[in-house]
Length: 179
Image 1 (cartoon, helix red, strand yellow):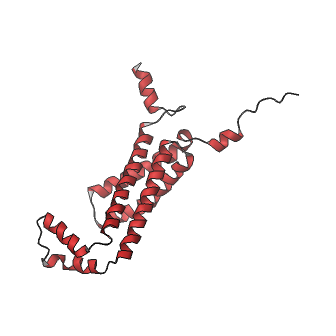
Image 2 (cartoon, helix red, strand yellow):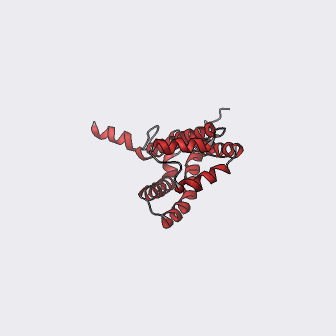
Image 3 (cartoon, one colour):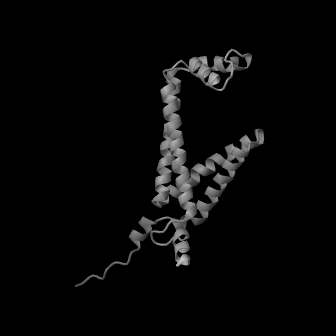
């Protein structure tokens, strides 16, 4: 009995999910939700006084906004326009929607979602390596290893895990024609 439950949770048979695929899909959906919230926050800040908003953040963390260390940040904030903020929010929202579509597609085991996830993971690996070489953080190393795992896992298992609806539709056994 326990053996069949384990088999159901890990096999890729008809209608079964694999733990790794479900984890990847959940990660993609979570990432999409996170970036959706970031896009919403950027959008909400687009018509605010960024100097005042940054001062409030600094005061929240018991930092003095009048310190010389923050002069460069305040100068940079003065160059940002509402239009720039809206473009940034739109770009982040687009990425969030892509991640959500990826996650849903992976949960539903659509073949295109595997290739979308493979491409997205592959695109970020060189950038993460460069970032690690310039400034090592454990978070960046973790993200790099996660992207490498996703890329390898989906590539190796793409034929086993995902539906090939076009292939199966074309190669189904046709019923004999009666005359």
